[in-house]
Length: 130
Image (cartoon, one colour):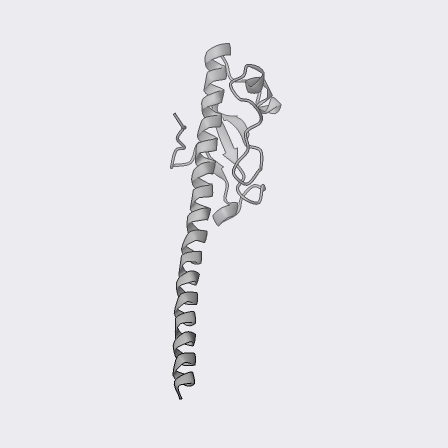
């Protein structure tokens, strides 16, 4: 009889521990996704700032067809900027102003959630790291 009580108690403790670990895992996964999006916004903002450094140095923005190569050449960037998913950032001129893009986790235009594109022209403007 005592063995059954001990077995039920151990089973209860294991069940409660598993439920707590699951809750922590779900919370951590959501935080991890949110941190990648926040990091992507910072990356977009820093790339935009480097284009502004180029404009301040040369008096104009570089040709978007060349990507970030001209910005790297003047050492405003060390290398082609990438988003947290490892995809290179892109940029284009819209009405004479640069817009930097991250294509999200899938690296393709469009998408939802983690695969959604981020842009420096989004309503939630990116910020730069001081």
